Image (cartoon, rainbow, N blue to C red; front, top):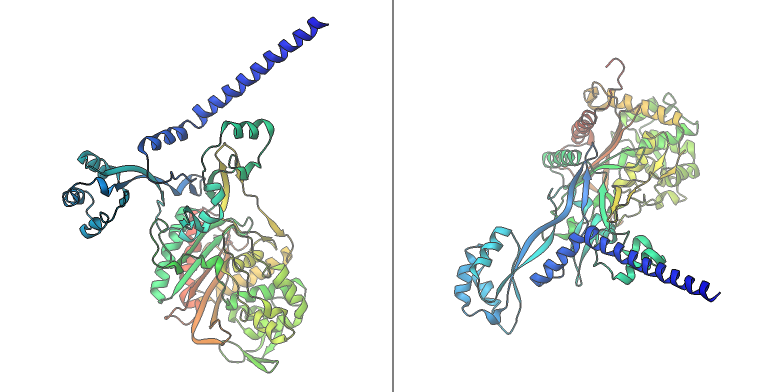
Length: 573
């Protein structure tokens, strides 16, 4: 019996030794092979005795139409030049040597660094390797050159509102706008833990996985397509300049998945530079609201069609105005059109026609469609920080006039991303989806997590309703938009323009001479791949959005359809 117990203890001892050897061997493999490059950098920076905290951060990538990754935000190796003023014997001579390499170095600023008893001063950062090597060869006493990694944006200003901006918050260099903020925990690569923490996480199951920093650190892959983004931004700038607008924006989204292919706003900024005007940093496509005007009318019309209250041929008498709660609502052209159909309401953008449909629905049903169905009562959940809620309290009022003005896009203020998602319901067969700019996250341990399509509601309106409203919008584009001259030869486009007075924002009514121009649509109309929203803030030239935005919208549509090689949907094309 004693012999048996002795043999058991020996086996347990051997097993324990084997297990410990296996653990240490595995950890050694992990350190040398998996994390070898990281620890090499650690040794490198210890040797350099860098004056700054070592900076490491995961990359962000655009993804092109073929799935290839294009760097959007990454790291760049540069150099930092510092000095110990107490060790510099001849400041003037030292400056004369340095200025030959650092041509922007100002003598008075350099000499100011010598004052007092400071023992550390930074002379220049972001220095390229060739210049750093030349300074090191000078071997100037008290002057030091250290390696530093900096955040680098290869595409410069492109998609700046999506990518965001990094800055110091206290002592931490961190994301404070855009994806740099939203995915800061994923992108921030902290120092590796001890062997004890490794053992606990792997063998004992301690830690919370993603947020612990082991699984959580990685790289972010976007659905933003770089060629589309660049094309959209160039067209937006051209349009703003042509019509002398204060600002503008564009969103291109897949209406079935919510993937955002392009998101651009101007004025923009360079994420890799110091910001002199912080007003341009927030993303107006997510963080600002506007009264959208007549692009809201198709939402009203679709709700009426879905309830069986109207169709394209339903008529009403347009006297040119409606009086509700002692307020007069007129058409934009201020004239009576007599007996007209719902198709003519869309073609001629008649405010009284939208009010007619709203009254057919009644206040409660109208409110339900807008707040619950189209999701305008909630944030969209887009994966960008700072999203604001649309201002829709007017359609919670008891006064019918508030619902009337909302039916044609005044009195309620929507964010561009909310408007894009709502219009996407018409394009997707009645589905309300969650928009997103992130396609997947590639974690450092080798695991990739794809962002799943999230359908919030699958039956906001029926497929039959979407087909009818689509036909109405296509007819409006083909026959009425710029006299029918704007249509595409091989593709049907379902779209609507909007021109809305801009609110003063302080309860003081509307500006008499400031307008928001908007344009929303989807294509190919009968098998949509893209829903697109465009807007201009206060264009000083061009009276209506049909003047200012038709060409950029249709040319963007034509580019996308050709770039993605989408089959034509025009009969006989």
